[in-house]
Length: 570
Image (cartoon, rainbow, N blue to C red; front, side):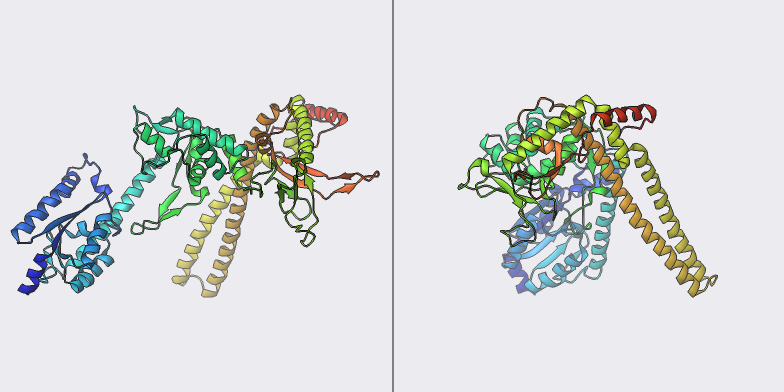
């Protein structure tokens, strides 16, 4: 035993200190908590450990410190460094102030202190609990201390979540990160204000997306125009950054662009509870479904208007592929085969001239696929779409009240009254679902008490559960319809704003196409009586679908109907 102790003293004595993020927070209103924080401070731990090592003759001391790391994980930088030295036989003794400083995960704590360290001949000492694995003291109560420490971590996690929920319920944001484009107000750290140089870049990124560029193309454009990345920008103005300063200050990552394009907070709202952890032990991030996010509107000035954000989100659902020449067609991602519903792919090559570039059905495959060619040249569809937009712009600007009246008449789901009715129906269904839960619980109790037979209980519970299942499906369906209706209302504003600017349109741009058009169905070519080929297309405009411009007689009839039977505008 003396020989073993001598060998251990010849090795490193690891003095391990740890302090979690929660324990570093100020607690002025709780004196006891504040005293505990001071007791657990890194400087205090170091002094206690050093004094203990000197008093008990432990030599070759070396500190290992993890400051601001939770004890529920053992994936800590200095802890892992210490473990590697343990496995290499460089450590003879590990000393901690108390077991909670070593960790708050009881299973791994037990494995390390009772299996791993004894197998490697390493002595583990926890001063406060009087644990010493070489003498066998404190081993009986150590598992109980570990369980209690883990329980404390779990309770702390629950308290933190409760604080977050309380803040969110009061309309406060819970995420501390400030997006690129905003900064904290010098007068109120909880309030975000626009950081104009960064916000200008954010607006430019959204403009490029609407102009038809994908995230990678946007990243390359920003780099070619020597626009500094967010990390470089933060360093240049003296603001803290989570990443190291980049070697290339103009390099933008595709993921950064995607994150900006998907961040709803640029519309002036706060978004809470987008992610969570598997548990207080497992810190793996879990993404929460969008319908379960908490969105608090108008918490800061908007950088991107709601209409632009929603249009960009809609565009990003239809990813566009580059041709072999690196070009992207103006209508790529918007053209669909009218027969099979597949997308039409843009074809461009060095061997064909620009006016010969075309789109064809992806299911055609040189007469071996499941569909006909559905071929249309880009120059042709440009002319057809330009003419259609010019006609629609003239109609909408000259007869906007008639257009809105006919749209509201055709699209009843878009009306406010219909949305309110559906929301009322959803609330009633949800209330009935809760009532069914109570009824099932009640008949279960009646069955246990012998008030109803088993056979009757099974029949009643089956009926209730079936009704509940149908209601849950109906609620999900109706909520989706309401979301679609509300989205259509937002897209209608985008359409009206954009179409009013097209009254004198002479040339088509990708931005105009992406703003106004949702999809175009391309039919197979037909021949007229003179043998000329024609390719019919159906243009679905954003929010309003196909627009059939009324004749003069139909306009007069609609205006008379508006006067006699007014409808609420969609």
